[in-house]
Image: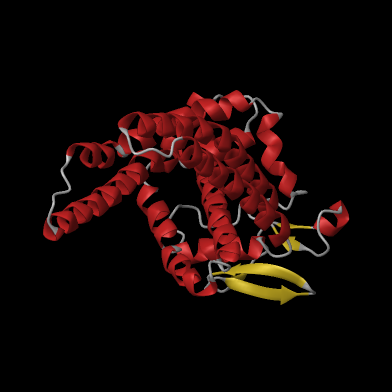
Length: 292
């Protein structure tokens, strides 16, 4: 079974009971790490049947010694997204249709800008996974590397997000909450159901494009549209496994409430690194298929 063993002070992955070195980088010689570190690259099974817990375990191992930049980058990007939402609420705080529409337009534009930071976060986590020099400032990478590529891809994703919320907003502005407590409870229940439906639609619409930012980070010449198309090809047959991996983090996120959400400082980097490991596996499969 998969696991980690120590051999002459070096951490080595084992698979199916066989001690095999899985791409151990001598980062000390490169000056990138203080100790020899496992780097996630070509180190999994030959197909996408690798178990989710194995992906998460390897993600956790890749974060060893790199939690600082991983956590710092995550906090910075989260702050940018939060700032956009707060500005929209303050600038368009009314409940009228015009305020809601203008608020959504502002959020749409802010999301495009924040996406450049999010793509930079993907670049940061790729550097960590490959045991390259990584720092929180890597989230600014795409601001100096053709940010229009990210904005192009993000525009499509933002449109899909907008489409997913149409049932939710359409009901809010067309339905009558009613005058009785029973009618208002029914109205709120419907709102919650439609909110859940909107979130589910957003996941279904955008899951095929989940690898877009990683692809852009790996190829400076790739355009946003090409990244979206290539992501769809890479994710074919792997979307359900990807979604199950995402859902596996939900219990830890819910439990973080009891730590006043402090636990998210460790849960979210683990989630993002798991997504990165997932991408590297898909990339490995695609490169192997192209050689055949």
